[in-house]
Length: 318
Image 1 (cartoon, rainbow, N blue to C red):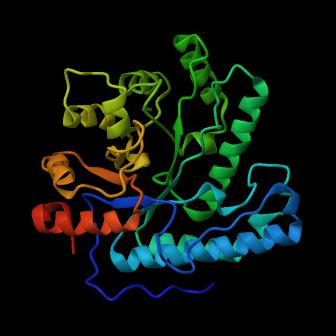
Image 2 (cartoon, rainbow, N blue to C red):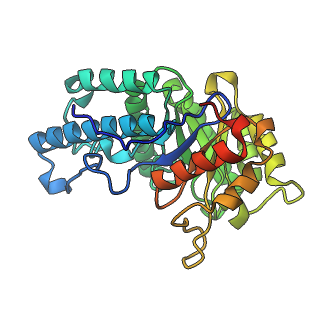
Image 3 (tube, rainbow, N blue to C red):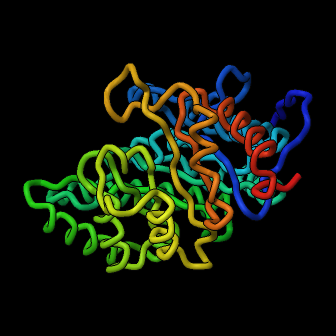
């Protein structure tokens, strides 16, 4: 596996109090782009080539992040093309065992917290059994990949509750029923997030209490689909923290800002540093890892780390 050479700069690290991360891709960086193909071209040989490339790209991203002091990263679901589909019959877990061992050693050595976020069609509360079965297969794929990369349960899969299908309470009950039937290997990694249309923070906290699952607080979704309006964001985080057990690690949240020129919910191109610092000013009281959902990816992550180092150095450890 090839290595990528990082920029020459002071290395910053996030210590025990906070990790800052970004999702899926580096921008304008060679040898870190994931590749895929369309179904008709997904021969066994082609899939093996793509998986080999993508695992190398992931290793390069992890190396870059470590060199730059970025300690959290969301891995693309596309790292194994058609990973949950019968289209991919490659025994990739066995074939690339040495690569996964190397990646696991990287993650552990770099003190990197990784996660995955199955897509919008992974819906376990659908009334359609075929949709649910495909969703479970997708969760099995994500879980198998994370199990190869990470030994402990602090590395998570983020899932939305799903649709409402004309009856939100029944849809929530279906989610809980399907969750209870999931394999324990999936449940140890699965966490749920409030969304910007259907399921508020209050909704997911209610579900979390019933089935004992950690919650991810998404600040932009909370603004667009509000609940618990008598509480500020810090108080909301305090409630979210109660859903996390020690085995799950620190609670994590998604932080993003609205792009003023796009539809509601569209992420901004870059994080506004002053707004972010205002959000963080009391976070020494709330241990939390923050995943930035932003278009410029690691660029904003680096700016945020530098700003925190200058403004709130007690959150960071050099």
